[in-house]
Length: 118
Image (tube, rainbow, N blue to C red; front, side):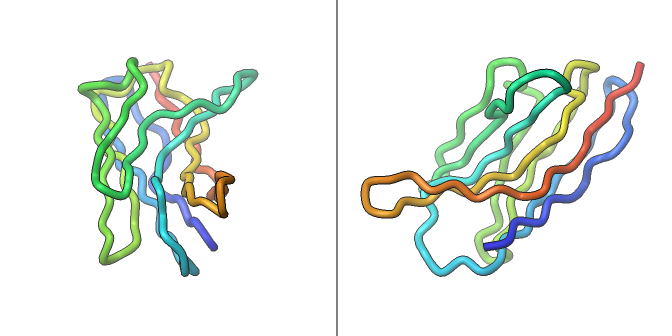
């Protein structure tokens, strides 16, 4: 499985970015896909996720500003980020969640850096 994230960059506060994550080599059912982020000195936290049925979940601080979506035909995950804030600065990681028996299996992309400046 390969997850190739892109779309990060430098943006001013209030601006927008769209992250993409292209998935390949998938030969199994996907339980969910999502975006996590890790700021310097902090743990990696969930930003948004989308389950196989399309149900979405967002971290409270991004609700109303970020939108996660998925193009199943292209095996690509997106994160539209609007009204960006300084505190959104982090490395953003694409995640794919599957199952092996009763165990959860996670796959990770390489991360893409988002820097929000004042």
